[in-house]
Structure formats: structure tokens, C-alpha cells
Amino acid sequence: MKTIVALGGEGIGPEVVDATCELLLAGGVPVKVLTAPHGEAALKTHGTPVPDETKRLCHQADGVLFGAVGGPASVAVITYLRWQQDAYANVRPIKYYPGAASPLTNPTGIDLIILRENSEGLYPGREGDLSDLARALPDLSDRAGKRLGDFGEGRFAVKVVSRRGTERIARFACELARKRKARGHQGKVTCVTKSNVLRRSDGYFREIVEQVVQGYPDLAYEHFYVDDAARRLVRFPQSMDVVVTMNLYGDILSDVAAEAAGGLGIAPSGCLGDRWAYFESVHGSAPDIAGKGIANPTAAILSAAMMLEHMGLAAEAECLEQAVARVYRDGKALTPDQGGKATTKEFAQAVLAALRNG
Ligand code: ATP
Image (cartoon, rainbow, N blue to C red):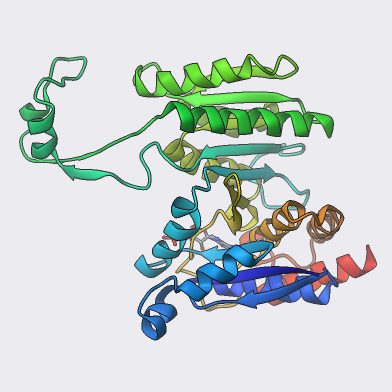
């Protein structure tokens, strides 16, 4: 029996995580589900959004499932889960399940991964007053010759691209593409940057990815600028396999690609480090539908499937994903974002029935 810790977060987070955990338990998946104080509630009861007891439980557990981020207290939770644990690889699978509400004419066969570098780039936010930066770097100018001091009052954000950070995400991309190739995928790494404009920073990311990819002669490789990549993800999503990119680009491109495959309601993710992982939907707290019981729990269920696979329960993960796919094919129990009328719980019950009949 494995143990998982479920942290709902805010908005629709607790709704989709609860539905997912009930499904796992009712479906006979060999896991024990623990919850732990976190976020706004923990701030009130423990004086901190991530109490020590919660940290301990997460570290002892075999898997951690998180719901969604809303206000500052849940941001503190993902700051802990993601950045403080150095979960540098954000794996965001984008897959079309026949029956899902894709806006594309032919979404069949969309099955790719957006691999977002999760630990540096422009996140988690190093910002300040432009005047401070201008004082520190008085000679720094852009390609048009404009210096920082010429802008007057303003702010700045720092984008970090380190060799270590880029090498490890590039290796992760290659290993993932190799693993997928063994399962019948293309075996291709697509690097996405804006190296034509940001020659030193994005150019460095691209250069290092290309050095690492050379060590994987069995894989195909291509590079696109981020604007072109956004277009391609809508126009030719089936041509992509593993797309490796920097933090902000990955954040945006994964929403674009998720929408192409059927929407945010069905996009799962995992954040992995060398000795740490947690899993969460790509979507946020969806304040517009929170509390109505109509959120689509597919993203959370598929995130749980990724978690099960990571925990060594690959067969259970596969059955769960197949059950979700059957519910989409059948089309009778879809949530409103997918054009149906089912509630969160009704969808989860349909997945449970498909799991039992599988
Ligand atoms: P946040 O600020 O927490 O990120 P947001 O509204 O900006 O919230 P999302 O929560 O990702 O961003 O939601 C974007 C849109 O997608 C909203 O209209 C929301 O209702 C919809 N959406 C997101 N997740 C789901 C879901 N699981 N089921 C149905 N609709 C969803």
C-alpha cells in the first residue's frame, strides 16, 4: 500500500482533488490518502501556509497531489512544492481524447509533452526598481544603444539562464523523448526560444540544448522561435513530440496546446526534481466556476495517473487513463467545459464505472 498526500489548494482545486481521491479509493487503487493543513486555512490555524507537519507528510509520502493556486497563501504552497524543492522539470502532457471539445477540425493524434524548465528563466520572480539596476549596470545598453538610465522611472525583471539549469532540463527532455520513442512516439526534441532577439540568454539555452541533444543520436531535433511554435502547436500539433522550453514560454505554450487538445479542464502536469515530485492540473483555481460543482476533474485525474506511474503503479495509471478515454469516447457524462451537463462528481462516477467495467 502506497501513501499519497492530497492538498486541494483553492477555488476548484479541492473539488477536483476530492473527486479524484474518492475515485482512486473506490477504484481499488492501492493507496492511502492523507490530507494536511495548507494554504489559507493553515495560515489561520498554524500561522503559516505550509506547516512543518505538512512538509513532513509530503516528504514521507510516495506521491503528492496538489489542486490549484489562488491567493497568496496557496502561492506559498507551490513556492514550497515547486521552487524550494527544486522541481525543475514541469512535464505537461497534451493529448487529445476522442470526444473532447477541441476547437480544431482534426485533433486526432495530438499527443505531445510541453517540458517547461521550472526553476529559472523569468520565474519565480526577481524584480526591482529600474533605477537600482541602472546604478549597478550603468553601461548596459540594448541593441539600439539605449541605456537603463535613459528610461526614467520603471521596474525590471531578471531572466536567468544557467548552464546547470539548462543542461539538466535538456537531458530530461532527451531521456523523456527516448522513453516515448520506445513506446512508439516519434523520438523528437523540439527546442523553443526567442534566440533571434535574446541572443545571449535564449541563445545560450538553445546552444546548450543542442550540445546535449548531440549525445542522443537516436533522437530527431528541431528548433522554433516561440511565436512560430505557438502557431505550429495550433496548426500542426501532431508534428510535436517533446517540446523543451523556458519557464514563461512553457507556461503560455502549454495553455495554447491544452486548448487545442480540448481545454484546460483536461490538461495534467507533474513537477519533478531529482529526488522529489508532485503533481497538479495545469489549470488555476477557476474562480468563475468555483463552488458550483461543475469543474472538470479530468486534469486532476490524469495528474493522479502521472503520479501513480511515478510511484511505480504503472498498470493502475494506464487503467485510469483508459477509463477517462472511454468516458470521452462515450460522451454521455462530460462536464460543461466539454459541452456536457455532468457535474464534477458525475464525471468521476462515470470514470469509476469505466474502471470497473474495464
Ligand atoms: P487563476 O488566477 O487561479 O489561474 P484563472 O481563471 O486565471 O485562475 P484558470 O483557473 O486556469 O485561470 O481558468 C481559466 C478558464 O478556464 C476559466 O474560465 C475556468 O473556468 C476554465 N477552467 C479552468 N479549469 C477548468 C476545469 N477544471 N473545468 C472547467 N473549466 C476550467
